[in-house]
Image (cartoon, rainbow, N blue to C red; front, side, top):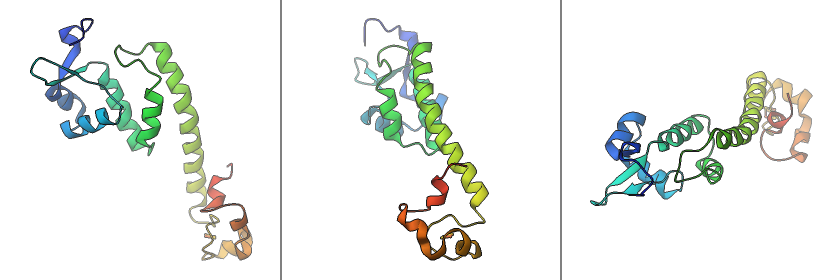
Length: 152
Ligand code: FES
């Protein structure tokens, strides 16, 4: 146990799983991926600093938004591992996430708008493909549904 950590700041695996709803096996996985850190007591049991609850919650939120864990891990490398991140730390992280979320929001809006129209995927299966992607000309711009990546 670190000398600076107060016992009340350290949570057992059971306490973390009860508070977050995340299984112990997932906590071990997150730790192995460098997303969270744990300390060990004399009995070699994992103990988590309380501020890891926030990281775990953000991991869960990111998963719901489809943000890859590797991206979350990358962002978390900028946070202090052995103390609670400061407000300034979270402002910095939120700026990165804001850009990511804006990109995703734009993509979702485009998907909603174009779900019943041609998305430029090369299938040429809709009536609107004749107009919006004749002979799959959009295929020269890139792979996949190229019209979804266009600005709204
Ligand atoms: S929907 Fe696939 S090319 Fe138009």
